[in-house]
Image (cartoon, rainbow, N blue to C red; front, side, top):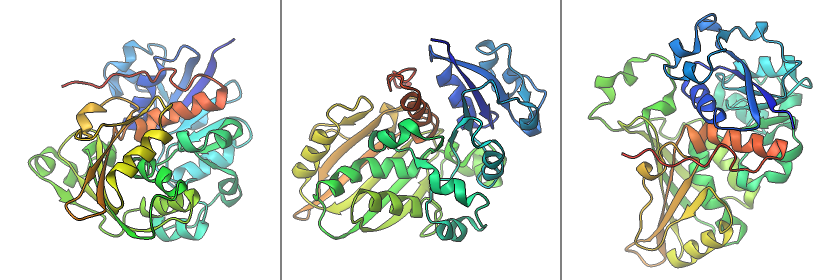
Length: 342
C-alpha cells in the first residue's frame, strides 16, 4: 500500500511542530508540504531546530503555492477564523483535520458569541465531525472534515462522558479546575507570556469566559443530559501539560469502577489504582490520558484528576489518532510514545 500523502498548514507553531514530530514515526505517511505564510521560504530547521534533519526536503511555503491535488489529508493548525476561509476553498478536494476551534461548535450562534465573529462556512460546519477519538470512532471513519477537540475539553470530557452515559452522575453542579502549561497559549510573542512574567507565577485567566466552555458544554450534552458546571483555567509555569481537577458528587469507588470498565481496552487511557494520583510528568510527550479518582472528606463527594499533554492528546497526537481512524490504520501507529522523563 502506498503511503498517504500529508500536507500541514500552519507548521511554524507548536502544534505544527508536534504534528511533524509524530508523523515522522508513522510508517504509512509521507509529509509532502508544509506552510507558514509569514515564514515562507525558510527551512524547517530554521523554524524548528532539529526537525530539518528528519525532513531535509521540506521548506515552508505559502498555502496558495501548495498543490493539494496529489495529497490525501490536510492538517490545518491555523488560528481560528483563518481556517474557515482555507477549508471553504479546498473542501471536497481533500480530507481535512482541523486543529483550530472553527468547526467544533455545532451552534453557529454560540460560535459568534464566544469567538466574536460570524461563522463564514456554516454549511461545512454542519457536516464537520467532532473528533474525540475514543467516543466518536464511527463518525470519524467516513468524515471529510474533522474538528479536532480542544485541549481543556479533552481533559475533562474523557473522565466525565462515561459517567454521564452510565447515569453515574446525579443532577448536580460540577466544578472543573484546569491548569495548563504555557505552550497552550501558542507561539506568538506576548508580554504576559515572557519568561519573567510566567516563571515563579501561577494565575487564573478567562474566568467564566474561556472559549472552551461551550465546547465542554456541547460534549457533555452529546453524552446525555449534560450538567451545569463551572470551569476555570490556570496558567502553570511549565512548558506543556494539563492537569484538571473535577469536583463532583458521587462515590469514588463507583466512579473509578465505571471508568475502568469504560476504558478497559483503550490503549491511551489509564485509570489509576486507588491511592495513585495523575500528574503531568507521567504523560509529557505522550498521547495518554491518566485519570485518578479520590474520596472527598464530605460523604459522597469525589475528586477526579485528569492529566494530558496539551500538545499531544490535547492537539496533534489526537489529530494523528483521528487520521489513523479515518484511513484504517491501527490507532496506536506512530503514537506508542513514552513519557519524557524527567
